[in-house]
Length: 417
Image 1 (cartoon, one colour):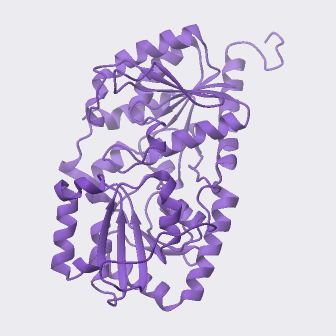
Image 2: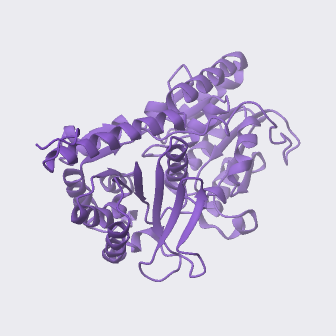
Image 3: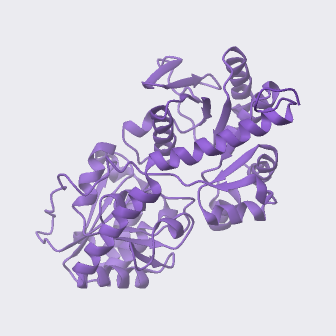
């Protein structure tokens, strides 16, 4: 198949250069990994993303079978994600011209604004389209309230897109329920999770050094995330104050190490650590390159991922693939990927006492923690390897292509309808 992906703000090229910024995270990784896995399966993939640098060529080969196409929509500069919605009409015009010259078999839009751009262009040419939202505005608005900076039209647009595209691919069961609440017909929705690179993230290999500024070498907890309040790093820091003094926390993510002192969220978290009396037990690394992440996971005794909400969440899968037990908030995709009492522990979001109790149980029972880690590795390989996830996407694509062919009056056999 010739597959066109649209990822208006999340370039797959960023995923190979390190993550941690406010608008750079799991979607970049997921789009890149899916494109590569589909190419490995013999498909041709073009990923359309917005040009943010005038020096970037229009088309950049990413790997055999994968090209990144930089669409001119608005100024070629980095802009906040929520300001891009007014550029989607121009993005759509560019897509239509591109697809008219080189028609794809199927379009896959990633994020709601990508859907706004892709749907009109695909419909004009009769190309079937599937949609992955990666996050829903209704959920974001519920949890962030007045701090939600999404455009006012987002929720209505997502509901409309869900009804108009050929198929919505929800990344977890919770998202499927949220889509139903938005009025998206159940027959429009299929749960297809994101995946993890189980060859990159593996228990085998070097581990990051366990030395620390305090001189202790006790139980090491790791948190990997963008540094924004909803990610719950403050909950882990508060939990640390309830744990013995040999428990330490390493926080990876956010700006580069040389810019940590200027970051408002880092300052807030450091102040909390000081008030909690654990400042000497918390280390902020800043942004960590993708290639360095497996060693970081291997150097930890447990990984804590306790966001207020999370559409899917790649961090628990990466930790599980590296054979590490996970303490996860039972929200969004984390409720699917982490199996309570098997690969780690579920805790309520925003509950430092519950996080502390779960981490302390792993600290006190290292054999059980290792058992969780081994089970996590098995689950990551069996259920979430990108080869399996790509095959599920292939099935969804084939379904909408077949349906479009039949509805256009031509049977899939090529015989007249």
